[in-house]
Length: 282
Image 1: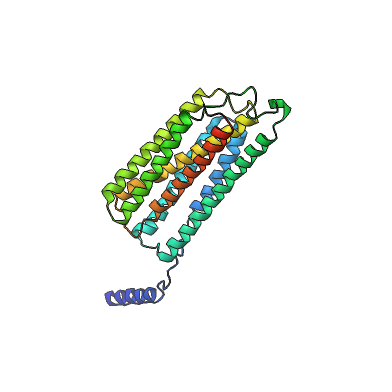
Image 2: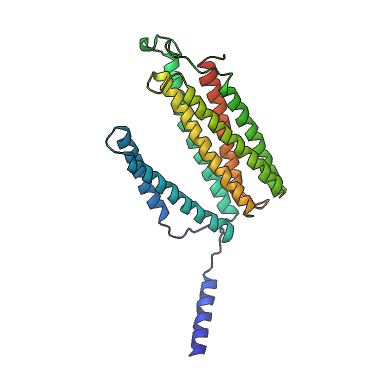
């Protein structure tokens, strides 16, 4: 009986070895997280619209947001496990992931382009309702030389440090890479805090005019991307500590650097167009 079991096991092992994967692509195992994430994101969108129109309390909005974050955490943890612990992210798979990240950043660029077009259209065609001038006659713009200039300095400096962290990762100097990444995260947190203070002290609100609406949409969505990028870099910092990265396999850090440089470039355009050209320098 024991001999039959051993022969059956050997036969199954040989069969599985014969049918083993002979290509560099990753055939993803069935996962429930894409459909679950889609449903929770749909719920989050509906609850946000209902809450803004006064048809629902914030209860559904809060918990749908929590479930979206939880689902994303579990789903991305599975991706990290597949690439780091199971070794399924071959060179071909990493190339596909890079292309996916590039396409994602391109879609984000188009997202901001739409708001910049709205800003330019409104500024070149100011209506009589706002005094036929831009910015509106009853709106006091935020001086570009104050907090916006400081935030520009913070983001540009953080872009330098995140590049240094990436370069030290190539030489496997994880201590310096972690240190520079931590400095980048600290600068990002400082940027977010100064942006929040700017909102508190802002002399106008989003309902004052089209200028105010475009201002808050552009700066708030950029601030949201800064927060996402900060979390992205924070996860990479933890993964460096856990020795997930090597000098040839650190796609997560590479994608985080790309995303952060995208955030930097958008802010430079936002500072020049909204704060400087569309507002006032002093």
